[in-house]
Each structure stands twice: as C-alpha cells, then as structure tokens.
Length: 397
Image 1: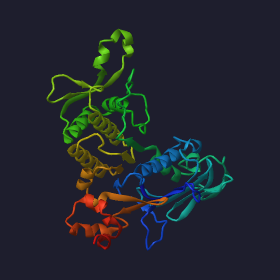
Image 2: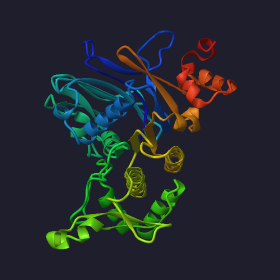
Image 3: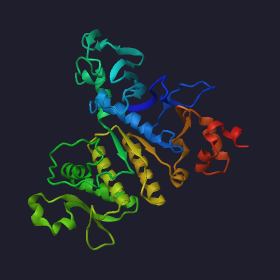
Image 4: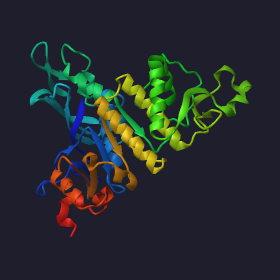
C-alpha cells in the first residue's frame, strides 16, 4: 500500500495551529499534499521537511499500535489520508483527536464507507461476512483501525492500514543510526523492531542467517556503489575491548566491522567514520527489510548528511534504484544544494512556509511550471532559490 496524499493540521483554530497542504489553487487553500513513489523534499530551514516525516511516522505508529494517542508528541491532530493498494483501490482514512481522545475516525474504500465513529466511541464498522454495518463502542482513546484489525473474516480491509504502519521505516541519517550501540549477545533467531533504526547489528546477523551470501554480497556491492570498497563485513569484539576481555568475559560487546580493500586489518564500528557507518547501517537495514519483504515505505531525514557530495549523490541514486526495483515508496529530505542539482525535479517536493502552513509544490500539482524550467538553462538549485516553482516565468523577470 502506498501513501498518495495527505492533509494534516494540529491545534486547529488555535494560535499554535500548523497545517500541511498542497499548493493553493486559484488562491484556495486546503489542497491535498500529494506524493509519488520517490519523493525528495527540499526547502529552507523551518519550512517543514522534518515535520512532514514526523507526521507520516506518527500516523504509521498509531495504525501499527506502536504508539498510543497519549504518547503522541502533540495532543491534538487532524489527519486526512489517501492510500492506494495493490488492487488499485482508493482508500481514504481520516482521524481527528483532541487531548488524546478520538473526536472522529472514518475509512472509505472506493467511496464505500466501511468505518465511521464519533467522539463518544460509538460507531459502525462493516462486517464482510455479514455484508452489513455492525455497531460498536470503544474507549475514546483507542484507534478502531488498529483495535479491530487482524480479522480477515470480519474486517480484512483494516489489515492494509496495519501492515502499512508496521512496515514504514524511519531513518534519521544525521543521527547515529546505531553507531553508539553495541550488542552483548547476538541471536539471529530473535525478532526485533525494524522501525528502530539503531538495529544495524541484529539486522546484519538476521540477514546473514536467513539469506546468507546473497545478503552479504548485496551489502558489499551497495557500499562499492557509493565508493566504499569493502571485501568483508561482519561482527566481532571491538579492538579496544579485546585488551580488556577479562573484564567482560563471554559477554564482551560486539560491533560491526569491515575489511576495506586498501587496508590490511579490519576496521571496527568504533573506528569507522560517522558518514561511512551511517551508509553501512542504512544499507544493512534496508537490504534486510527488502529481502524479508518487511517494508512498505522508507523515510530518511537529512539524506547524505556527513557524506561528501559525490557519495551523497551515489547513495540517493542507489536508494532510488532500489525503490524502483521493489515498488517501495521512499521519502527523503535534504538541504544540500549539490545533491539538489543532481536529483531530477520530477522527484522534488518544494516546501514553503506561509504563516501557519507548509505548502508543497511538486510535479503533480505544478507540472507546467516544472516543465517550463528546463528552458531556463539554470541548475536545479536555482529552481528552488529563485522560487521559480511558485509561478514559473511570471516571477523570474
């Protein structure tokens, strides 16, 4: 299932209100913010790039039951979301909550209402086997889409929402991605949460156990693609800890390590540069998710942060190729002008801030302007810096 469009607001009609929308049409606000299979979000600081990923992730966590309303970073929110599934159905899901209680929730598939509930927890849910709506009442702080999922006889349509939420992976590329975490005992049979982007070591061991050399070869080939030539990748004790083995015994901390082509010894997790480790961690976790068919979408904030320009570009090209080959939807943010210059505008969503709104301009809602730009002879960064995306030649005299 893929996320096609969203409209979101929090603290509606309050001083702290913030909205996420598509670009205005004939000065009318409230348009859908649309997405493609591959999305690169660009914008000035504080326009809403990271917020966008957080909004999508929060919804995924609610639908998957990984978070409850009481654990949301904001106690109020309004979601209107459009999905499409493998049957090409149009799925419209809405959720409004206030002070961690659901105000309204609904689900429509191809225009048919399958779920509708109000703030008192009373509503109707379509029962497939009975071919009719059944009344229900749930606690005000519960999400029906999660609460009633998992029953393929009664409500099979809810499972798509659950699976999308459960398999949406989020990576903060500018963070540690697990570099500051080691493993005492590694058990490749033990399940772990793929949504936790610090799980590079368990993902590696599980991938090696389940997919063997194929998995290892994918990692080495992908690292080579971004100009990190490694001959081996594995796990083992950190060199600094080996000297203190008696202090840790059999539970000595274990980390990732690689054998680089031009070095005699191995480079362990503590010795890897932050940029190289970020790339390695992302590639390990992503390849495991793809081979295990355990991801529907990927959110990556600050893609390429800590890498030089050429490696950033190669990493993004690699991610785009993997997304195209696997039909996985991908969302990335960047503020790197050199990266922008090399990524086709067709993948862009330019985010601009107008008072309490973050507005999205992309090829789906401003095709003519995006097409016009090719005649300017300018580079992609100028498309953003000159605000050409707003009205094309009308604003670039």
